[in-house]
Length: 377
Ligand code: GMT
Image 1 (cartoon, rainbow, N blue to C red):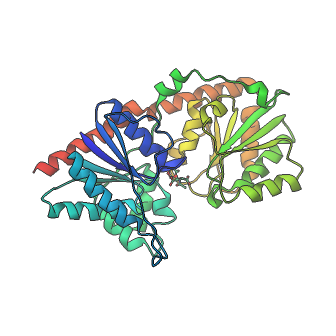
Image 2 (cartoon, rainbow, N blue to C red):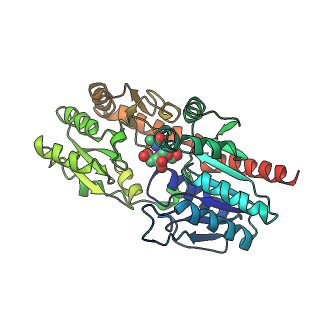
Image 3 (spheres, protein in one colour):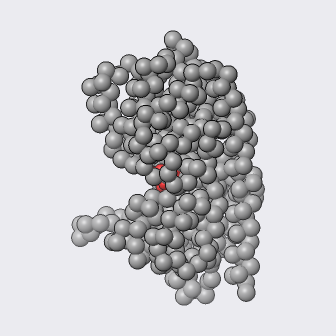
């Protein structure tokens, strides 16, 4: 099949899911065309099965805001016509679903009928999409997609609660390529980062306010009173400065490392002992799944779709939102006994098997086939 994937090219979240999906589909023989404003970070080599089309938005003095949707919808039309594309798969409703709908309509004028699948990721619904300024347009584009998927049951429920949805939402969870991790044979150089045999606690995110970065530092502070630990803060974003100031004020600078955005996530997770994710909202929690595939148990808040990813008392613990004492207690419980810790590590890895890309990809492929069949009728 010839498929266009529209996504954000960024680190983390929806961009990673869309990119990994496209890469895997291309390896299975599908022809994949990514359309974004920058080459996605995880795509290095383009092949005859893998294309990238950049959306350029020329600046013009009159515009206070550059019309990205306009450029994106025109690019979609051009690529569909040039490469005889079969279907559109857009990740993240804003503004991708809206632009794709416009593209679809323009193509109809050319006598081309093209099905569109929209995958909802979370913040496009719970944080931004439901804002009254966007809600009507987001609802419209969701209702005009041939198929809509959400990455968790929780996100499906949120979407149905926040919008007036007229079509069925199918849940297709996020996934992980277990084979890719296995073959990587990662060098696990823990002694470099923990010369005094410290246990490594890790957090990876975009440091937005909803990640509750200060909660992580508070949890770590409690844990460090009992155990020899070090905290790795990976990523960058608006809350980083505040977090660094907090560490200075609480004399935690020696035990907390801010590593910034990293291309070595697998290497870092390989020597991590525990992952913290106390977010205010998380529709799935891909970062937690990526940690678990490296055998890293997770302590997180009990919000959104996290309970669909982390098994309570098996691969980690889900605690009430903002309850840093409870999260610290669970972290200590997992880490203080090395036999127990090893058990949690093994179980964390086992839990990820149900999210293996080989399994999840078949759900997308059957959706694509169904969309194609509908197109012909
Ligand atoms: O977590 C973020 O802030 C990034 C965000 C995004 O929109 O890319 O992630 C969302 O999509 C991910 C991939 O489906 C999910 O794993 C995250 O849970 C979800 N984030 C939120 O719901 C806050």
